[in-house]
Amino acid sequence: MSPPTKSQQWVLREKPYSEPVLGGDESTFALNIADIPALKDGQVLLKTLYLSNDPAQRAWISPLAQAERLYLPPVQVGEPMKSMGIARVVESRNPNIKPGALVTGNPGWTEYSVDDGANVSAIDPHPGLPETHFLGALGLPGFTAYYALTQIVKATSKDAIVVSGAAGAVGSMVVQIAKKMIGCRKVIGIAGTDEKCRWVEKLGADVCVNYKSSSFKQELTKETEGFVEIYFDNVGGEILDFMLTRLAMFGRVAASGTIANYNRDSDITGLKNFYEVVTMRLQILGFINIDWVQHLPEVRAILVDEWKKGNLIIGDESEMVIDTEFANIPKIWMMLYSGGNTGKLVTKLKE
Image (cartoon, rainbow, N blue to C red; front, side, top):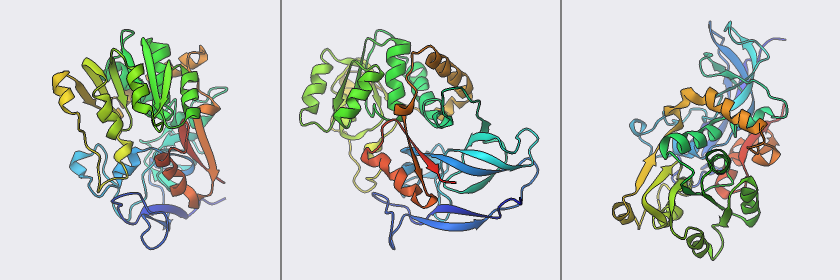
């Protein structure tokens, strides 16, 4: 059977100032058919099977993004939308990558893609662990949690920690690593529904608070009585602002994401309590996981070992895999910004 010569792809049609538009004349994305170039020596042809849905993708298409201030080049109008994913090798001119292999890589929102081989990594299967977890708990989200806790805020058993977005891909692993591997004295999660909060507590959080509750600030104030040493911030916005008032002297903030502002380019929420940083000598520590990504294989091995010991919960509840048509890729991605997922949100493309 000859390899395909055409591929569907979602390209950026217009950079959105607020929430991306998914239809009509003002649509943010456009569905195109593109030619697949012939492979050169060292390259592989990939068929996308799963796509990773990550909040940071929104920053890559922001009209306010400055290339010199981003850790990755932004997506330009007319280019395929970027995304990590899992793919099958259809054809290979790379002696180290065999046809039929299952790999993680960066295929983007494309049906087929060509890679030079440097950006793909073969998946080493583990019984009982579906390959999709290599985009979540055993991929960059789990790695991000481990990296930030151990290398950025240097969490210890003496620390209490609050985790926002605790039911998400990164937050759910932060909760588990902080409580079960580091042994933090108290772990407090923040999530968007009572159901999600109960799941976060099942993961190991001492308590989880629903930020959509009318009594949210009162509950969080009660749970942080005496103040906490660490805030792991996945959301930014008003919750970050409030948490500046709940940190102990010399407290540390791991600034992982600002999803509260990702669809607010024209109306970004600022901070009113920033003076707390001065009076309480706080540290707000920004980080990007690619700065330490060479350690991904060893961190993955650590997390797999902890899972085998029963210390980490990595299962069906840790991810939401949605089986869908290629045409629905943007709609699934947008679920991230409405709180529609628990754990890692993965798009599975129907074959």
